[in-house]
Image (cartoon, rainbow, N blue to C red; front, side, top):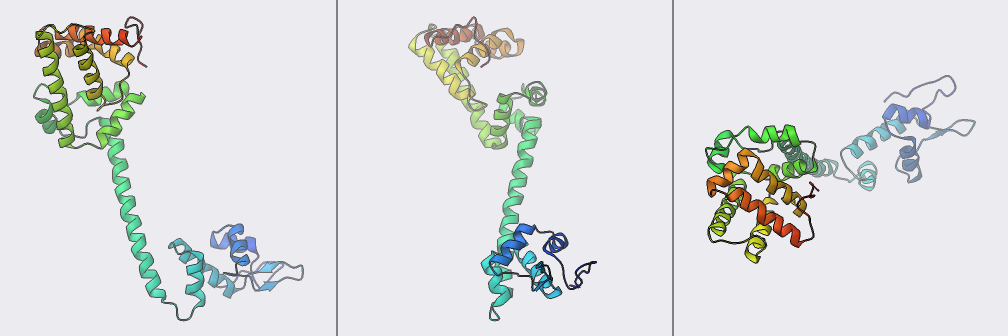
Length: 270
């Protein structure tokens, strides 16, 4: 590499000039000087260290090897040991670089999937959704929910879980919800009363099943119980399992909340 000349020193580059030329910090150059890896060969009359063309060539090789991931001790061996297997060292480093590239590609794919989950909610085709959740399922619902709730912590938690799930995992979630619906309907038919041990177990089971979407506090569960009864879509779903199931479900949720010191009338989404 031809050495630069300036108005005061015509035989080499100062540390600052070498730093700018090579794109490394002055601190790094000082460190390499201190450990004897790459030292400036000249001094000016004022005592400033100067890098000659030969020094800069060695520095350039240090920079290249460092960017390839070699440690400083390994770089020193490659540069100073005439018997060093340079191609072998570079092949080994090439293998490590390939492994890092593969890890980064997998990380990038995971990030793309997480971004898509935040935007779409469900990473399933419309056909997969219908097969898993039933023909009555609206495949546009997740996207609409994302637009409405996308800035909430719960949507972010839901998206993170969704990103990690494929059709089989979602089928397990759907099966757990269907089994809970059947258990609720059977309990109502059997005359299970709000506040009873069996009713409370069903309420806690609902919280556990719902946790497949995001963690559900008891106060949040009370809010859901209200929505199950008042929202036409949810009410129709539960009443399709058993007529009157939506208000009964809300009552057993409220009774369980009271048993834990929560007033259902003042419960909020927290």
